[in-house]
Length: 122
Image (cartoon, rainbow, N blue to C red; front, top):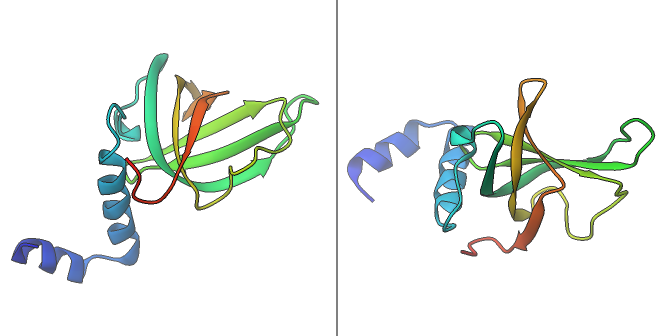
């Protein structure tokens, strides 16, 4: 580790250090795009950690919603017609693939294909 990196880490907040570590972890996933670079109406693969997972009905349809964070930004994941998804829980690492769209100013992916990952997995 360089002196510059050591000084930056010593002066950074815990949130900044966590975001930096998450960006580094997500960057190790081949073919994945950082959330900050996602465009509207584009297919993409993204990797990160789930910060929240909730059951939130939409117009009478059960829906699992999760927030994926990769250190550069957040992506909302929405699975329609589901009440639960085994393994999809806060703190879990995940890689998703699907169409990114803008919903009320937030990047969102509906019914993405997903792969649960272990920490440090490529």
